[in-house]
Length: 102
Image (cartoon, rainbow, N blue to C red; front, side, top):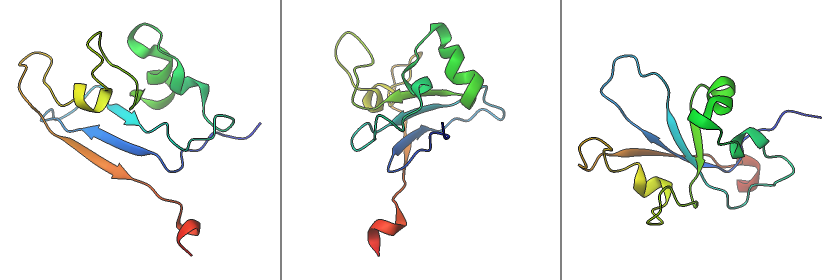
């Protein structure tokens, strides 16, 4: 079976002031992703997301899925500091298939 490759995924990335961050947090857009090509590790949420961290070096969350009991989706959830409660920014990277534009 071939490698799962990310295509047409929007990735909001958390920016930090840490010189050497221990990992990263990503939200990926589930819309338009072919489930047969999706890496099942992207849906593995074991304690501490150990499986995701082992494979990707960070944590990857479906953007449309609630992050908390209040129903806050992950992109909104990540914009609030968990220790401070203060707003923080995210960076959005959008990847498009160049062949679709020809």
